[in-house]
Length: 606
Image (cartoon, rainbow, N blue to C red; front, side):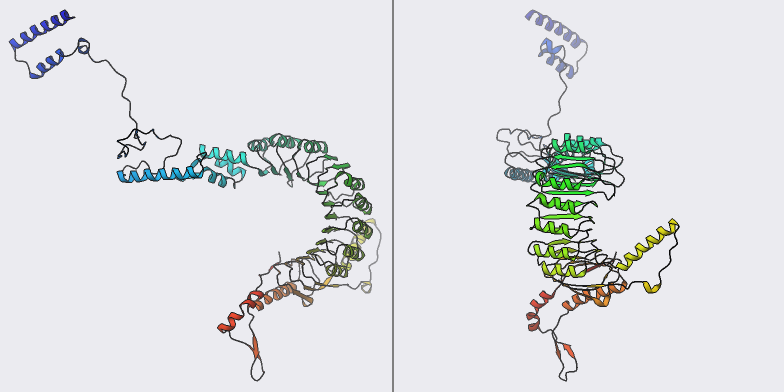
């Protein structure tokens, strides 16, 4: 090695001497020669190519803040670990013209905010989302998104990845969903929405397209914890669910407690068994063979049948079996034109001791005999609805004798055999009454006779028979009735369509809703309303003079109450004048003004 180095130095010296003898070398060459002598042979061969230079971090290695314009306050201590990237940076944290003092204050403020967040949620740090350049906690964003419709939620999920995750959490935590399915939507749309809601317990579907068993299968698969299910049918939609499919669905959903289905005209038969079902509503029923409802915990039952004469549903056997299959029934509503005294007698023999609300609607064959069976079997009714029946004032008397301290709502609309005397007797004998409906009950019999005669004459002309016209002297005189009601707790009174009523006197301090629609023969001079809390009066289809009389009575009473001032006569006794409001007298009359203050009443004529 020494020999090689010596030989190289000798050659270099000879070359250097040769160059020096000919010309004077520049100083740069001399310096280069000396530098080459100090290097090793490997270094003289040239530097080896190294890896490319890496760009350094833009953040400080001690505190993690940006390096630009930054003076680290912990320069003398040990280096701190950099901040984790899972937390969002604060706004304006990369401002270029920030001074070192402002940067230090911002760092202290950020540390304080982090401490507050850790105190509020000590276990897990709350996630935040960027909204409009700021920061919003995920819980607040979820509360906002919960108030959107399903369609708007799908649009919010397309904003960004953070919003998509928050929308997913909203879907997963949703316990109630109301969804309207348009005619263009398929069953797959309903399945895709329900698949996102793992905790769904209440579902309401408004179907604008046809419904079949596929919908029940989709709901049963996607909602294992379903407790309340409601299906509404649109005007142009058809419900094709059969009785077997509905019975299978109810049997499989053991947690289902509320079921409401519309458009059930394709059931055919009804055979329901459920130990969890408490509320059952079925509408548009038609020709149900052997209906059986075995639900021991059922508390509310509503069955609406179609108004068709060829309906073959056996209501007598169904009523008879309710006492054995549904012993805890409290509220019951049956609407069918096939209701009769036999069905009511079967219901009375069922001995439903907990029954509190009974509604038997459209049963024109129900008479006072059925009322006697009801009052003898159920003495604790709070609501009784016999609208559309043929009961008379005698039936109302039996009702008043049994329920003086229990009945609060009585509905007797479309009952042509009752009169104003029966209604007055009911309001006088039922002190707890809060609602009474007598619409289309007090009617003008001449108008009904004329309509029936017109129908008969048309039928005879079509059959080819010749009928003679009656003389004007044979026309019956109109028979009108008057109604006088004085009640301390009555709140709603409905007299819609009472064309046989020509006089009305009301003294009801708690009355707030009065329905006088289509009371065509009610005279304005024979109307007296002493109802200080009246807020709504419905007068659609009434005469203009009657509407004006209603407004004058109501509004004048309110104006008198507002402008009530004491009056005194002049010295000569000629007239009475209002006493001016002196400060002392105004202070003493404040309590009286507050007592006489009333709410504004609205007269609805549309």
